[in-house]
Image (tube, rainbow, N blue to C red):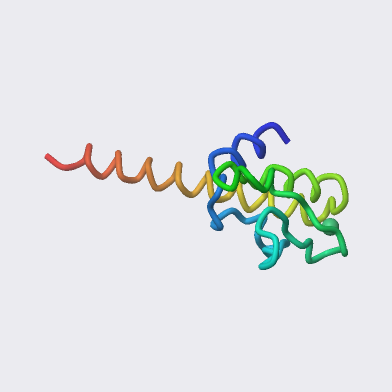
Length: 99
Ligand SMILES: [Zn+2]
């Protein structure tokens, strides 16, 4: 959970976060989003602080209400982090191998 919160802060304001797989942005109220797994609306932050919206409350909602989906997101984020680490490792090795 701690790792996901850091990730949510880093990914704040961006739609690339995997949590968006389970949420639909509300066109009439951008400060909220609709959970696609239950009828709940989840707040994304205060309406007067549009730039500070983050996915942390969405992640918290999944964690509290939808354990299976939360696990899937967590795996997805971990795999993404591993892929980036692997890619970075390959780049470093390739550079080192050049005479
Ligand atoms: Zn829900």
